[in-house]
Image 1: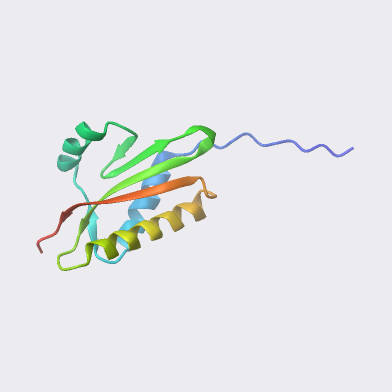
Image 2: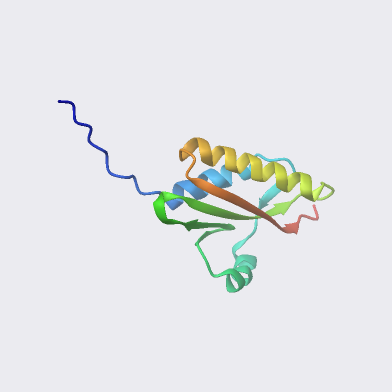
Length: 116
């Protein structure tokens, strides 16, 4: 008789998620960086959800899934929609590869535009 034992669920590590999101975002077209903590405190008063690491908010859901909100700083003279769509696709793809498609959605927001 062959019995199959299920391994216990691995807990999702938010630090790994934020590291993956940070690396993926900085590789994208038109992205200069992520918002700084000073502007995030202003946003945090509005949003009040998830876990904050710089400009990355991770909201855990039941059944080991999660949602990611990312606040980005865009380069000057780029198409905002093109840069955000590119960042969203790249981040979602990286998260799906690393976390076995546990990421439900990635929301990207242009917090500011770099003047340099």
